[in-house]
Structure formats: C-alpha cells, structure tokens
Image 1 (tube, one colour):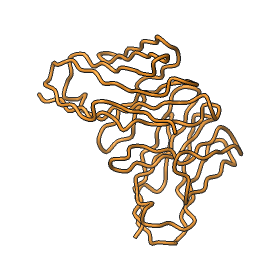
Image 2 (cartoon, rainbow over the protein chains, first blue to last red):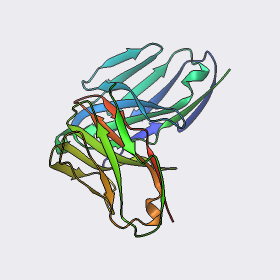
Image 3 (spheres, helix red, strand yellow):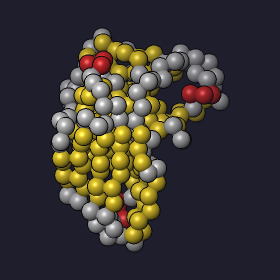
Length: 114
Length: 110
C-alpha cells in the first residue's frame, strides 16, 4: 500500500511569518509529485508539478523542492498573508499504472492571522 | 476557457436508486479521474482513465462504475447508492503534468 504523509496537519501563523510543510512519499518508482492549494468551498488548484530529483519550483512567494531519493518534498511560503489560508495537498504519482494513479496526502491546513 | 464541468452540483437521493454524475472537459486531456472527499480521509481516487476505453481502479472503486467512450466525457455511475457513498465528489482531468478539478458534486444518499 502506497502511503503519502503530510506534516504538520495544521498550522497557525501570523501575517508576515514564513512557513514550510512536508510531504513524504515512497522513494521507489517515482513518476511525479503534485502540490495543490485548496480553499474552502472551492476546488483544489494546482500549484506545482515536480518530476525530477532536485527540482525547485517557485510561484510568487511560494516555492517547493523535491528529493525523490529520500522521498520528501517541502513547500515554503515566504511572508504569509491571510489570503494564503487554505489546505495544501500533495499527491504522489507512481510509475506503476502508467502514471494514472494519484495518492493524496491528508493535507496541511494553514491559517494566517492578520 | 479551459474547464472541467460536473453535473449535478448537488444531489439528494435514496438508497438503491441508480444515478449518474457527468463530467466533461474541453482541454483534450487524456487522463481523467474521479475522487471522493470525506472528512478526515482526504481526497481518494475512485477510478481513473488514461484514454478512451482505458479505465482502471483507484483506491476506493467499490460501488462505482465508470466509462470513457469519448475523450471529453467520464461519467461516474452509482448502480445502487448506499448511505456510505454520501460524499463530495470531484472529477478531474490532466495532461502529462497539470491536473484540473471540476467544481464538485455534493451527494447525499438517504
């Protein structure tokens, strides 16, 4: 059974704080890792797709890194703003099943207070 | 506008009454999936399809059927819904990398 774990489960920070979350996934047969941002009452929205060991992606104040050999990815938010409040999900795609199967972590719920 | 549409958005039904939730995408994506979201359990993949007439089970396929007769459509069929299928359902489509989610269908089975 493939398992994807995210930590912490929830995080409360003040506006302006920088923060980071972890996604752990199986280190064998890696195909891709996705990060999503999911606001309440909306659909998950893709942030990053990471495919190569050592990948680093950036979108504004949000960035992500990938280590496929040890099976983890970090998501960083620099200078958190209240509008960053959301649940952040990662999803692991295994090389089995031709990359069709996605396994999501439980998510990290971020709350940013003004 | 690139999008994934689902219908209906909300549905209340009774145990045993067959229903279909439709899903359509206009991006010519090969991959499509259905997920359910339950409190404390996160998003779980029900079925996925890698192309027309090619489907496979995700993590929680029991009680569901799918078909992919055209590239743009991927309906989810509940032949005999039960209360434990009460959930929020998302359809999604993706190219090799980016996945786009539909708006969700909230299903209640009484």
